[in-house]
Amino acid sequence: MKKKIVELKDTAVSFWTERTKGQKGIFIGSAAIIAILIFTIVIFSSGSKFVPLYNDLSVQEVSQIKEELDSRGVSYEVENGGSTIKVPESNVDSLLVDLAGQGIPDSGNIDYSFFSENASWGITDNEFSMIKLDAMQTELANLVKGVEGIDSAEVMINMPEEPVFVSDSAQEASASIVISTQPGYDFKGDQINALYHLVSQAVPNLTKENIAIMNQYFEYYDQESPGGTGQENTYTYQQNVKKDIEKDIKQRLQQMLGAMVGRENVIVSVTADVDFTTENRVEELVEPVDIDEMEGLPVSIESIEETYEGNPPVGGEAGTGDEDIANYEGTDQGGDGEYERSKETINNEYNRIRKEIAESPYKIRDLGIQVAVDELKNEQEGEPQYLTAQEQETVTAGISSILDSIITTSINGAYAEEVQPEEKTSIVFQEFSQSFGSQQPTEQAVPVWMYVAGGLLIALVALLIILLVRKRNRGEKEEIEQTTERTMAVETEEEVPGIERTENSESVVRKKQLEKMAKENPEDFAKLLRSWISDD
Image (cartoon, rainbow, N blue to C red; front, side, top):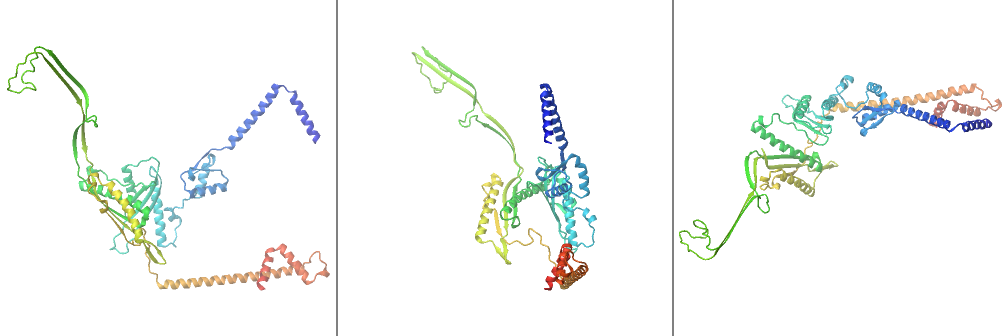
């Protein structure tokens, strides 16, 4: 074998040495070109283009798809912070159909299709109400998500309990919606109003005033009054402006104070005094160009200088001169005389400003802010723990500083000097009722017979469990005994190989039988050991 390898090597070397440089170059170039072609073909054939299979997914949905793709052995890429999953372009269509058939991705939300797929008579009224509310929230979120400029939406609906008696007044529902808007998209006033109208019509007993819409940046979207001030009467316009001012200040205070003491531990009320006096005036002002020197801009200068020397002197000015006395005969002076006159006239230009001023249609004249803070901290062993006097003073100082700053910056400058911020605020510490912030479910009295029936049912279930366990243990023990007897009977009939009959005492035979049973039937052997241990 070694000799053949040496011969092949010598043949290849002699063949290569006999070739010319041109032939060697052709061989090397051809081999390089073939290698490059093979490498290129392999790269392009193995590399596949990845395209998005799903976009804007939640983490749970991506996890479901990822698990399914792993089980199928399909390569994938996760991008955009885990919200987009990409697969080879050739597999997109088939994967979409297959995953849709399996109900993937499943967001876990309940919609109205749940009732047709899970119809059952064994559902309680409370369970049905919860499922119905969840389905309504999901459907409304999908409806809002279909609006242009909205990527996703989360909806929370608070449905009041239906009145028991006819005389009871029906309470109104409320809805809170958080939308994720597309970057740079700006909603117009009519679009916001349409969104409010859409939500109010989708939920029973839901008015537009009980709807709160905000985006992911904590920016509120308030509905705008159609038609504007030109089509509204004066009273309606003024009340709407006053209401908007109070609502805006209240929301800012509620958000800020809620971060300090907890949103459920503070209530804010704001009252505003607004001045709706309008004023239109025209001002024509003349101001110097150089304010520091109070001078204008010279546009022309006229300078006159006159001098005279000789005899006789000039007759002077016609009429009465500046230094002459009227109706007084002057003296005729003789001899030499001289005359000198200097005059300079400067024309300055000043800034002439015309202002047509239309004052704001309203000014905040006064503000009153009332804050109520829950003095209950927590409960220890059933005993309520309240804020101490020192803690109340600390909270009061922090809240007062915030309120004074808001009042000072909100009131118009013309009325700011007359307002004392500390006189316009009120901070009260009071224990809140349990119904504030969260609705506690009403506890209904349970009849005594239900407790008795429940106790009997529990006792019956416990008795059945005990009987089943005892029956199971008895059956296992009988099965072990039967298996042991059957095995020993079979082994007794068979001869144990490798042992002479003269040496087959009863103990040796039993030992061989147990060894063979342990090798062939380990489960039966384990049961036999357990039965022996339990007997001991």
